[in-house]
Amino acid sequence: MKNYKFLISGGGTGGHIYPALSIADELTKTFNSLEILFVGSNSRMEMQKVPKHGYKIKGLWISGIKRKLHFSNFLIPIKIFHSLIKSYFIIKKFKPDFVIGTGGFASGPLLFIASKLNIPTLIQEQNSYAGITNKILSKSVDLICVAYKNMNKYFPKNKILYTGNPVRNQINDLKHYNNDPYDFFETEDSNKVLLILGGSLGARKINEFVSENLNFFQSNKLNIIWQCGNNYFNTYKKFNSQNVKVLAFIENMNNAYNTADFIISRSGASVISELCIVGKPVLFIPSPNLAEDHQTKNALKIVENKAAVMVKEKDLNQRFFHEFKKIINDSSFSTKLSESIKLLAKPNATKEIVKNVKFFLNNDRKI
Image 1 (cartoon, rainbow, N blue to C red):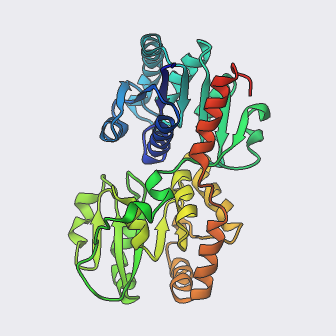
Image 2: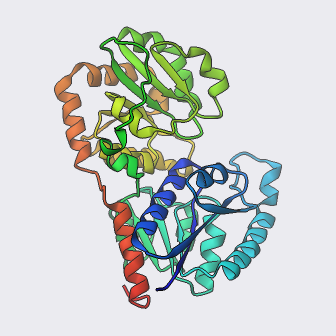
Image 3: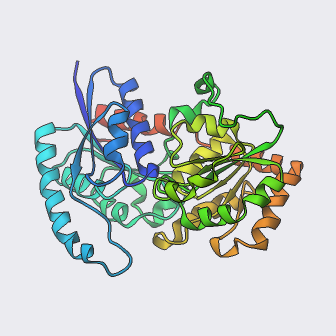
């Protein structure tokens, strides 16, 4: 029996880490004998999250380019060169059969070296607008798994597989993973629950808006689960109360999704994939600060299907209140949103990706 070895790289944010972990879990179910090693950025959250899920990880000295002029940007060429060399030695020592990248700083050097060494490679692009790293890698990798149609404007058509985005098992089967529910609120009132998600690192504008308008949310008889992000928890933890739960990070997302009646969220690709499966009424507030405004493009794909509402950061004013009140007060409208977003779900994405990895390996790189 062959012992398969897989290198996986994905990190920087939960949107890259959790798809990578989902793929690793599915590989473990699929292959009888295997070894998995993760590679990430040695200064990012994957160095803590991945070991918590039982996998080993190696760190690279790599980071992204800061948008504003910053001294660290001058180190980028040195970091890339250093990471390419270290990736080469990691690959030579581990001898992987397949290398998978789900985005993040570290995936670039690792996947580039693997492809040049003629090792089978796969990248997973989560967004409707392809990132620059994956655009560069697309020329040399073997397979490209995408979550949106019409991605051939960014990638070679013959390499594209339309699989959807991997999501955590706990999200894919909420009922199964909710047999030990966590009680967020120590109250027996009949208030509906609003879940606010600003991403794993937090969203400054959303946090400021929520803190300034807690009276509005509570006057509408809403209990609030507010994930403010690790970067902002010390600022906003003072708002914790019986009806408001302020959390740096939500580990048991399955329980949070189950508890929620309405959701306000950023529109990163991974959280959108989860929300399609969860099927609750959603109002997206995209981050305008990311490359090519890709979160807005992601959200628009859902809004165009009448499956969610979107309010831009610049419209966090009366426009927001108008749209939000419609969701919480018009039950037929919110029900329609729920039904429509469920139709966009691709719950078998992880299985599809791993199935193609296995097929590729078993058919001598012909797919």
